[in-house]
Length: 98
Image (cartoon, rainbow, N blue to C red; front, top):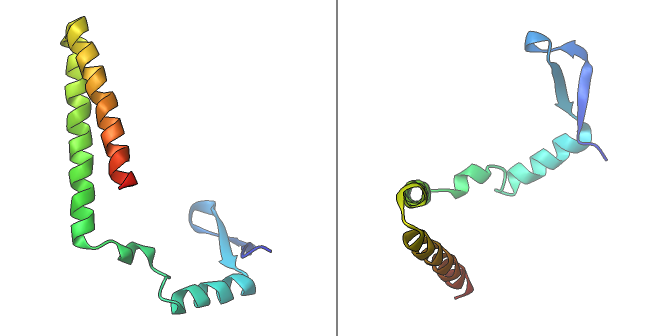
């Protein structure tokens, strides 16, 4: 069953198609809204957002270091970096397994 349908030939801004909810879609949207789960972005508080940013920054910093080792490192250094990455991946998955 479809919850969204094209609006009846009404052109939208810049000639784009416009869509409206069907009656079924409106009912479902109301139920989700009333259940308290209608705004999933509210599940993320400032601490969660800050930690996500820290993860992102750490990931970019690791990629920068990895690029430098890959471009400038000796074969021995590159092998050691690869082993470190593989060990890090195992450790990260073990955190999830706790």
